[in-house]
Every structure is written in C-alpha cells, then in structure tokens.
Length: 253
Image 1 (cartoon, helix red, strand yellow):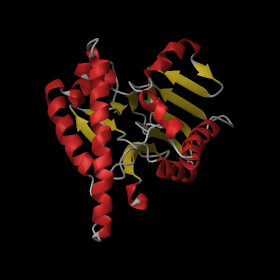
Image 2: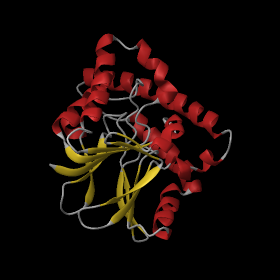
Image 3: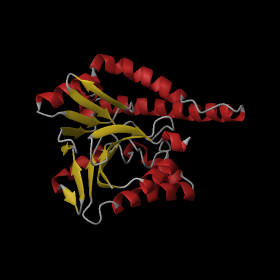
Image 4: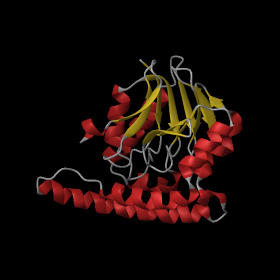
C-alpha cells in the first residue's frame, strides 16, 4: 500500500469536476495517509450540485464516501482547505473528526526523510492579499467555467473528426495564469517561504499547473487538478524513494 497520496483542486459539487475518473482513481489507488490539498469541495459552485442529474449527484456523493472511508482502520485523511472551501477555516479549532484532520497548512515527512510544507497556496496568490480578491477570484472562476464549456464542445467536434483530445482550456489557462503569476512569482515565493521555515520541499495546488521541480534547493510539487482530462495529476509517496508527481490521464483518455 502507498504511504501517502496528495490530491488538490478536485472541485467536487461543480460541473468542472471529472467525477467518474476521480472515483475510479480512488477505487484503485489506496494509501495509509491521504492529503486533500485544498479546493476539494467547491463551495463557490455548490448550487450546481442541486441541478445535476441523479447519476451525476451519485458520482459526486460516491467520491465523498470513498474519501470518508479512507479514514477508517487507523488511516488518516488530512484536509487542507483552499480558497474555494475556505469556509472550513471556521471549524479549524476542532482540529479533527475521528481520523479526519483539518488544517490551514501542515507538514509531511516523506519516505526519503525530507520534510515538506503542505499548503493549498492561495495564501501566496498576490490577489488573495486584498479584500476585493474574492470577487476577482469568482469572476475569474466564471471565465474559467465558460472556457471549460467551450473546451467540451471543441473536443466533441475533434472526436467526430477522429482527432485526439486537446485541452484548449488548459492551454489558455496556463498561459494566462503564468502571465499573472510571473508578476506575483507564485512558485518562487512559495519555495522561498518553505526554505526560510526549514522545509526541504513544498506540496501545493491552487494554480492547476502540475509541477515537480527544484527551486533554489527546494523540491516544489504542485498536485495539479481534476477539472480537465489533460490534467488528473496527483503526488504520491509509495513508501520508498520519496515523493513524485504522477498522472492518471493516460488511463482516462
């Protein structure tokens, strides 16, 4: 069994969530510890869940059920909230519910002995530092959702033409976000923070851009997201050799 699995930006309860692929992944990939690295339940889009078909609602409920099931038999689930589920910060004082632990951030010791900071990362998004940032974020979220809808139509046409899946939304999103984070220097800032606090690495999410790289001696890992078939990434510790980024998209395509 794997030592630990890290997942971020699942966006459960929103139309963006690739619930069928996520459900299959959880069924076939178990671990002693599961780290949910923010934006797991999409509170901003919760009303969408009430408009799902019964089958769609069942898919999302099954994901939550599987995550809860992981907290049984001395296994731990660590829920690190992000900006889309930051409402959970109100309950942070309770710390735990059974084997489910709630954090704003926490640390993880990998199988190779390295110490990692585990944090969603919205705290280091320059926009999140201002009172109006929530509305800016929600506006951007609406734009991203429109792009996802365009992406779905675009790929239906590609399938009819016998062409392979192409993530138009990821291409646009990554280019736009990288332009924004070039200014805020998201990755470098996070790595510098981890280094200044005595960590060997950092595991995060938030920008939906999977990464496994060294930045100034710090192992930077971004879990990616589960809102686009071109992503479906996760970070895993198999019990030896430390942490690495992997993708589930090959089996989902």
